[in-house]
Image (cartoon, rainbow, N blue to C red; front, side, top):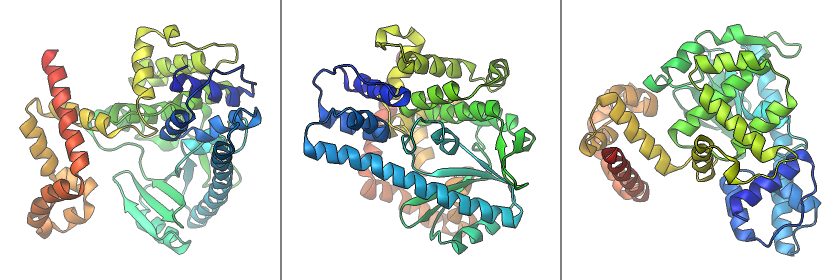
Length: 382
């Protein structure tokens, strides 16, 4: 059995609380590597440990540790998120939980779904106030992005405070227009007037839109299949409404494909084989299986080049490389805010940037050049 199919089968058993049938011999190193690459080790560990599948003592300890560590991490993040939310309440700033915060709770066992951070959408216009608040409660590391601020504490806790959902890019014009008045989609969530949430349907629509962004930019891992299956199994939704909203966002085909694949993989009575997939589903499935939780560098480089061609109308590699080494003012504003604010540093930055790539990130630069070359060849043939 292929490693990816074994992984999905073990995940299916965990999600549905099923006892696995007799398994063929398999490569434990390959399974461990694959599950870590896709951030599903805890989900797989549950089945392996509950059914005494692991005979080797060292491997048993490794799988047990990854599951216990994720349980502890989930407890820690839940407590810390409550603290952050109460601070936002005290400042009179509304807040909405996003992504994994919601989906985590729907898995059949606590700590079964892995995650890297907690994402919270807040009322825009309070960025400096929130930065001070996070500093006051012990978050010492802070990175600014176009759509959010990422805060770290004790090297473990990572809270992402979002001020908008998508970057201001041509590719996401439809998304940004759709979510222009996102506050109209909120409903109360608890006693505090500042604690809000998306309706079940609107959360699922956003979840798929966010997944599509990852899929389109750098790729996304197989955890997406489990998340979609668990959510649709656990939450009753107005399917007609969801379908209509996905069509407005122009991602209905993506959502339908992912939901269908998820159902074929994780339905309790299914015996999933790749031959069960339609041609369209097979393309999406293979792309996701061969990616990582947050995509791959190669896929990101390929999509960057495609975006450059679509925006500029030019297919030459030299123009793309020039854009990458010498970003536009708009790129500086979001990727290098310090440089953008201190324009006197532009000349030094333009000298420093290429040499930094050659010295500190030679491997990444080599991968990007290779990905662009392959993408150009592929597009030239078409």
